[in-house]
Amino acid sequence: GENVEQHPSTLSVQEGDSAVIKCTYSDSASNYFPWYKQELGKRPQLIIDIRSNVGEKKDQRIAVTLNKTAKHFSLHITETQPEDSAVYFCAASRAGGTSYGKLTFGQGTILTVHP
Amino acid sequence: SAVISQKPSRDICQRGTSLTIQCQVDSQVTMMFWYRQQPGQSLTLIATANQGSEATYESGFVIDKFPISRPNLTFSTLTVSNMSPEDSSIYLCSARGGAVTGELFFGEGSRLTVL
Image (cartoon, rainbow over all chains, first blue to last red; front, side, top):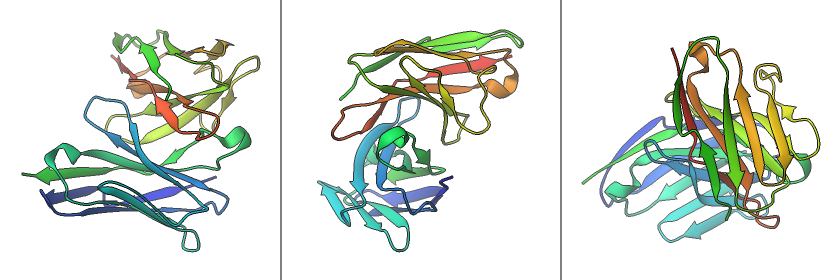
């Protein structure tokens, strides 16, 4: 089955700096890669996703890049703000058929943005 | 997007008892998914709940321990049977938000503590 490794486990930055979180996956058939943000005591919320037919996707201060050959993808947050502090999870799945919604998650990254 | 409601939001249970978690989606969805998030950990898929058929369980999870019902396209239940302290976790219900985009949305979770 799929295995997703996420690094770093903790990340501390100053407000305004950039933050980068990296994930690798093992199943070459995976083609859907979402990122979730989970604040303390709350549900995971989708912040951005990318499919294997594109290499990069951006949404305001958040961007995700995908390297299919190397089987890794990364989350980039620019101009970080204290409200970006949360746990971030990457995930991978085969988007289609019975695999849709069956996400394999990385271990999570605790991001702390200091004012 | 899909709005997903779960209850109970939290409960304290005694060892050896069983508890049923209910999940309601505000729209009809083909597949619903149950995830477990152990304290401070990532999310792990327990099973996929399909309407009109038996749930499909992931490796390490069995029907006797986690029976699931899916009586219609908007509702599912997960029972945690014969609980032990190791079952103390957050249990999250999820469903895809749309047939085209396929984003997975989560309920707010049910936090179970087993004494």
